[in-house]
Image 1 (cartoon, rainbow, N blue to C red):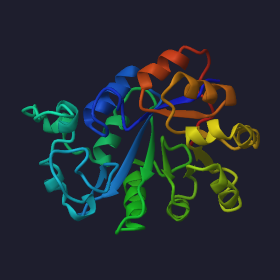
Image 2: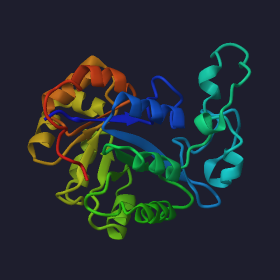
Image 3: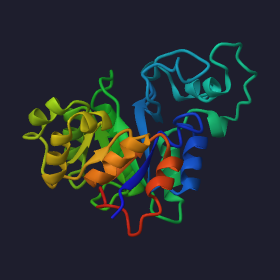
Length: 269
């Protein structure tokens, strides 16, 4: 079976990350799943933003956790993609629906409206001033959609073991994805995480430590890899037989592996 193809922050090689446009493009391409990072605003909304500060990805400044949703809604999250790196900024062609801040609720609504099953990998960002409130808000939203069950199309990822343990306590049937960047981190995590937890190593870790990569896959634990964007990286994932490839370049990966016969790999949630 081929691996699940997951659009990292949407089709982020083509359009500004975490914007509605990027996710719509990924859906048009036919990806199996969408990936997003979430942070909590000061007035309690989960928004799809990677950085704690909006400086890199918008035409404004401010820390997400100290801003209200209405403040974020005034910002253009695609302006940086329209501006040349070494020249004056272009006049923004701002479409609030397409290029504005995207709430997790809105992303879930779009996924729920799809005629086919599309899954969502939600990464909660830590550390944050709101700590466990992020996971509580997330599970609350999952409950509203009826997605806090074993057959949920949503899986929760984090580099924080404490955050994932919290999710597991709030939604016991959901399978967390334990993200880690270095092979040396896994021996400390392995005794802590459940046997049904998914391992989420970075592609660099697997390529630099082929023996570790093989042992991890052969252990029987499902493996979801981030972020594979090159021919060599994708081939590593295919050779290992991982369950999901998270990529900034969904069109490229679909061209590379999407035509393989058979269904996607083991359903992650």
